[in-house]
Length: 249
Image (cartoon, rainbow, N blue to C red; front, side):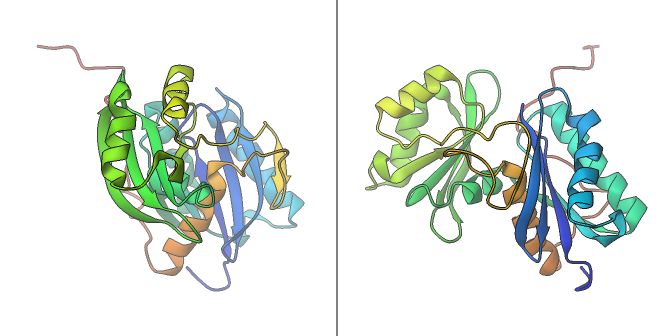
């Protein structure tokens, strides 16, 4: 990434609530959330608002980082297709960021250990375990685990660490699963941000910046280190089979 092109968009369309964020020199300056069902129709308008509010134009963009999943089959395809189109049109660079790493980084200050929990096939989740703090390092996973076995699997992976030292980082977790994890003593995530836009210190209450903010920061670092993805070969990691299947012969 050219030093002169210091702005990177982060895109997250892996889940029900999408988001887009802008990082300038590795620091998130603004973001917007995308309403359910509006990932495709709302992402360009949100990007234009963010650029306009910062006095920037599309040519100021050095790259786009996009969540690679696991996540929604349709959502991931929308996000990556949009990012590829922008990069092709501008000659900007593309990089993919694991949804596990993005969620771990987003919640890195919540506890000593961070466990991103992402929905997989029905009745299963995909989970990883990371060290928390100023940055994150993957310690275990990803592993597919039945929802009913999640607490035990995390406890085994964490070894001597108590559940109270492990923060769950999972968007859109079901109520029953949250109750199970809370009852086992794990730290549950703060509420998701409300729909709308905010600056770097925006948001309200205990809400964190959306996942796209973490994608933007991690993507900026990856591009600065020469970790651009191939615009043709880059593909999502769905973590589950699509609902549509080819008919059996």
